[in-house]
Length: 122
Image 1 (tube, rainbow, N blue to C red):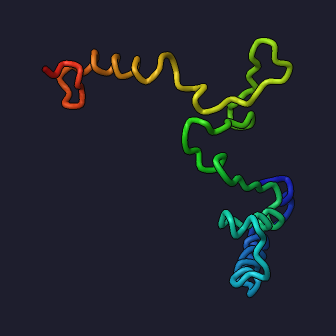
Image 2: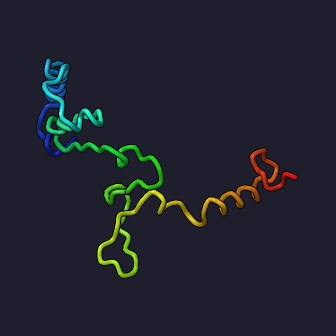
Image 3: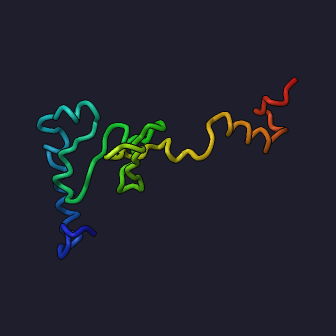
């Protein structure tokens, strides 16, 4: 349990959360912020849950190889030669050796009889 709830009865916390979720305001909303209407995520609920955070956009979806990996999730700041400040690691930085062609060639060599291997078709 987080430090914000330390020393409190968990049942009391649960009852308060239930009251908050069953309120007219929670069910119907008072006003919708721009971020809520665009993303469908109401960021104002973080005030009800101390220590909580919300991520929206590509950081939340994890789609593609262009996603930045935050330091708190195992990422790092990479500096190129001559750069004073590094840029955050991206998902593509963890792809491994070689490009797609190399990976396809290694797959074809390891699985010569598979139907999806086109290198040995005459």
